[in-house]
Length: 297
Image 1 (cartoon, rainbow, N blue to C red):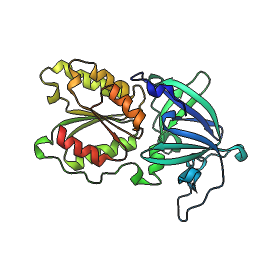
Image 2: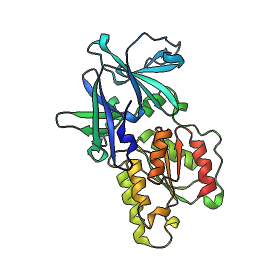
Image 3: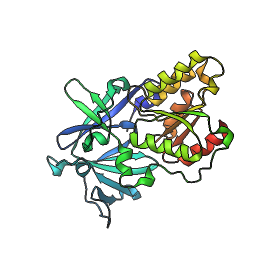
Image 4: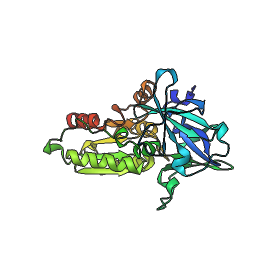
């Protein structure tokens, strides 16, 4: 899919593919989308969860399909016109069964708010943002959590992670990750590796306010913030814009910024480099990130 916004750096905007499940509008970052296909018969997999609808093999590639109608507990309005959104993230290919596709919306991350956390509400528990348009709202879904509920290893893989030297255990690490599920997993993995001074935020704006506030303390900035681990997709401020703000600041630019995202590919890696990211890691390989931290901070 053509996607000019991927060529821009630090604009704090994204393009969202708006689709419906039943009658409700949802969204996915267009950077994750490979193509849209008409729904087709699938090969079922025995003993799989009901949300996992089956697999098919376009162009000799196996695509697993998740039925968002079952995930969100909604009925298709006309199943004969249902679609498959084929995506790539977390180093895997997956299709999502939806009712229809409405188009692409270009939205500033500043206009995306965190959804309220309402216990027992299945939609809110897997939504990472609410985008307000003039006549409707679009819920941005936490696709990593949707996939992890079916296959946990697809989201975080700590294989090969080594423990940190005790002399580095108190290094101050800042996390910016909007998915509550992944935020907690990253924190716990760092703690398990021996890092004891970890603080996290669920959006780039709050992480920026926290990090930039340390300039007032004075002294060596690296004694106050050892590094930032940031997702790319976040409400209020995305990871690329956050990185650019840090690297454009004469004091803060010494802080290493490590992007940890399901979106890392050749094109997005160039974008990360253009805003000054010190290293980039693709989810779910947090083991590689931990080992890099152990050697470089």
